[in-house]
Length: 130
Image (cartoon, rainbow, N blue to C red):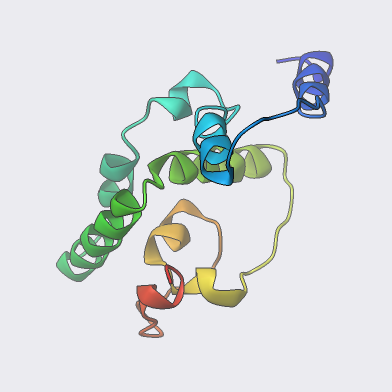
C-alpha cells in the first residue's frame, strides 16, 4: 500500500457525522468500523492466541481470558490490536513496555501490546476487565 493510500485512510477518520440516538446505539453502529485489512478482520484470533502458548498453564490462562473477552464482545478489539502491533513492528515504531491494568492480561502480552508477562508476576486478569 502506498503512503498516499494510507494517508487517504487516515483522512477518512476525520469525517464528522451527526448521530441521533443513545450512546449504546452509537457504540453498536461503530463496532463494525474497525478499519483494518480483511486478513485481520476475519482471522480466528482465539486460535492464533492459543497457538502462541507453549505450556499447559499458558493454554489454561489464555482459555480463561479468551472466555472473558468473548463475554464482553471484545474479539474485534483483539484483532485490531494484533493489526496495530504488527503495523508498528513492520514500520519499526517503538512503543512502551506497558502500564496500567492492561499488563494483567496475558492475552495482550501474547499479542504484543505490552511486554509484562502477567503469568510470571501472577497478575489477575480481573484487574483489567473490571
